[in-house]
Amino acid sequence: MDINKLNDVNSTRTQNAVGDTNQAPKSVDTQPAASTDKPDSVSITAQAQQLQGAYSKMAVMPEVDAQKIAEIKQAIAEGHYKVDPEKLATNIAQFEQELQDLSN
Image 1 (cartoon, one colour):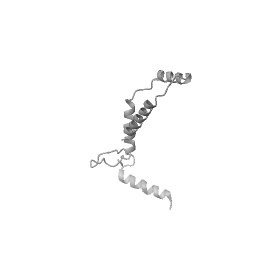
Image 2 (tube, rainbow, N blue to C red):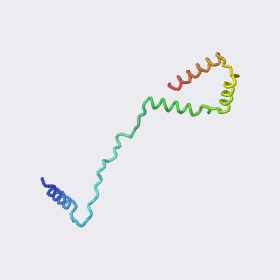
Image 3 (cartoon, rainbow, N blue to C red):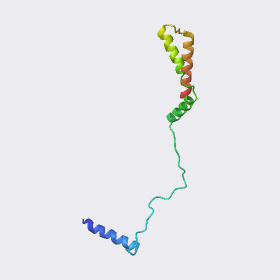
Image 4 (cartoon, rainbow, N blue to C red):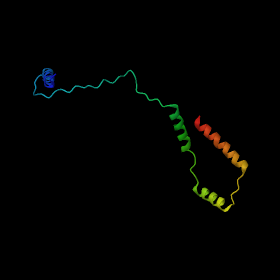
């Protein structure tokens, strides 16, 4: 099949559709009309919702106290830092509960 013949046929159809070949072809909107039946929607996965919730909760948490960390490091290095096992267990349990709350 000769491509030039196809181009001649398409050119003839365009000329017939447009009329005068000296006129610029009219533009045709090939995009579909916007449908008013269904509004746009977005769905967020449960995991994304959990991450967003965790991010929101972390945003209100206090920042790290660099000076307190430096003091604790120094006390550990000098051998003055004493660990209270009761307080440590309480803090670990509280941390675990906070993690559980973040995932809910």
